[in-house]
Length: 417
Image (cartoon, rainbow, N blue to C red):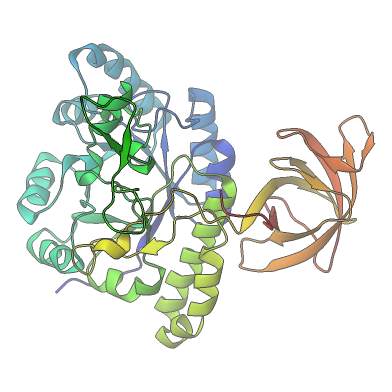
């Protein structure tokens, strides 16, 4: 029987701002991609300078950093991979996430002091696979998303105690087995296994008969619609006890292309849920309405428990649309704050003087605030802030003072997008 221990909360980061948000809002570890060899080529990703700063920032807060290098490599990738792993060895992240056996061998050779984690892309579905990677020198294996909790328990019982299990607990689900999708490459020429997925599983499909071009017939699974590949998002916030009992060492959040608002919301909610449960099962149950309310304040496609309690059925799909639920809009992360309520942000979405907004604090508090004044970097006063990525100084009226790394958001009054 394995020993119950506090699981790691592992958060995705698309860029330096999001990494810092994840760290401040409660991550134990973050995973990021460099400019090559990760499976999110369309994410912002980290150049060498940002990766160095991000690793230093995380380590200064006691947080680990894992770097993805999980493409399925071709011969043409190998020379560049040598240079990339040599660079990572100098930067010293805490682990590399790899799926290709050739990349695994190269990483072991060039990064001898860095742990290696085996990506979910490697289709890790049984304890013999885990044991194989353990004998090869891997520290951790990321379980296939198709595993049930019972299967994960069985894996835990059959592998060495120091072999770590990492499992996705929140975020988008992929239509293809362990994310190894061919749809994107076939339909658009962008290879998902080289980080260029165009997410064709979210598209609306119809049938065209060869001799009747231009005549589109709907694909009807039932009366609800035609989005035959479009899964709901995974959410296991209500099942922290079962995840811990199964022996999962690291709770992984999906979303390496998500905003700071998404990362702050999900990180803070899971952080509090995990800590509440380990302190008191009663406290965890009592706060469940808060967790469920908060987790819905970032973009999502309704929720499912995936494969954890058995194979998904028709209720795990969204048949009538591919839109996100979007309850709140991200305004910006506070970069500086003074005692008078004046803050500096890089604005992300439009807001105006007089707007009622919310200050989201890492400790779980949400503070109501009113925008009293907006000025640009030259000191010009503005009635509204319509231009994304503009640096602004904003004066807020609130009961609690703002602090660096607090996040500003506003309730979305429009329909989902």
